Amino acid sequence: MKGRERPRVLAVRCADPVLSMLAPVGLAASVGTALIVDLADQTGRGGRTLADVAREGPRLAELSPGRSGVALLRGGDLPVLEVPGVIDDLASRWPAVVVRLADHGWPGPTVPVIALYPGRLAPVSSAAAVWQRLPAGPRPPGPGPVLPLIRPWLVRRVLAGGLPGRGPWVEAWREVWELPWA
View 1 (tube, rainbow, N blue to C red):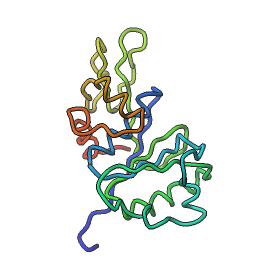
View 2 (cartoon, helix red, strand yellow; view 1 turned 90 degrees about the horizontal axis):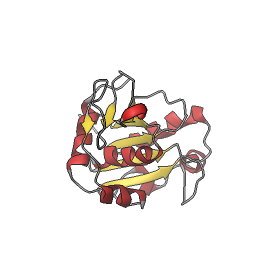
View 3 (cartoon, rainbow, N blue to C red; view 1 turned 90 degrees about the vertical axis):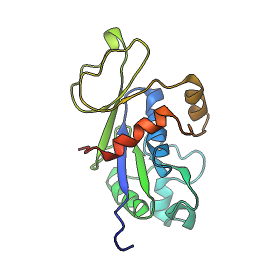
View 4 (spheres, rainbow, N blue to C red; view 1 turned 60 degrees about the horizontal axis):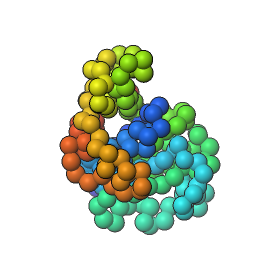
């Protein structure tokens, strides 16, 4: 479309296993309509994967959102070098794409998400990141947005496969789309 900006693709990397599941959903939900490509899940459970899209081509429903909301596409067994091209094809039709990373070599912008654990688990990195506030946690040691506490009901909802809805935690993710991530 003439005058339309190219959709944004942001990858999310997080060492904390629970936060690594929550962060991509929060980032995607903050823009209303987005596709999450889960490269950390290569099992292919639950339907088609990014590897299927690469082999067989995308279905119409995978090319555009059809309605607002967040969709999920698992990674599958696609070779790492093919991933960016397939994601670029999908991103040409989606308003936003969030890539959940494990240990993949991702060439695009990547958002590190770090939990602010207290005590000996406190983060030491001073690099820019998205910082997840925790009860009794320290101040972030580096620059970047600080997310409010996540309510327990929200954690349960997202881990059960639901969306978080609007609220302070999701709204805080909106700023992440505006920042320059290398």
